Length: 150
Ligand SMILES: [Zn+2]
Image 1 (tube, helix red, strand yellow):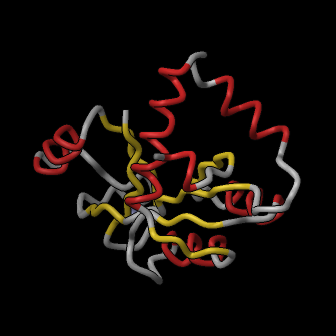
Image 2: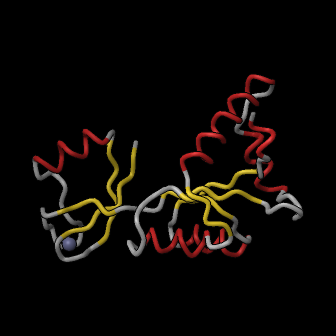
């Protein structure tokens, strides 16, 4: 399932759930997607922030909460570590490092004030929670050192 942020021609924002991107295109083409507030069939997709947050900053204490979540999602063993490194490499390589401006930039992307793109950076707990409350998608990762990724 994928969730798209949608917007009608009266600027009502709502979410749509689709099986796939093709499913969305097909439903849009057949005018099956309508605004829940005004029934308008003129609906378009609006970008939502794709954001990756690495935490904590070097020298800071690790967050036990997020560390638990991450390790729980991983199978055990060297193969898992290799997979995790691959994934981390991919995300680090594909995202733009905005450093401590992360929360601000994620918000700008979410509200269409900045180009939609994957970003990474650091947040405080407060910033992270605020982003979550605003419905901005953020993933927290334990910090990864460059030398661990080779
Ligand atoms: Zn509407």
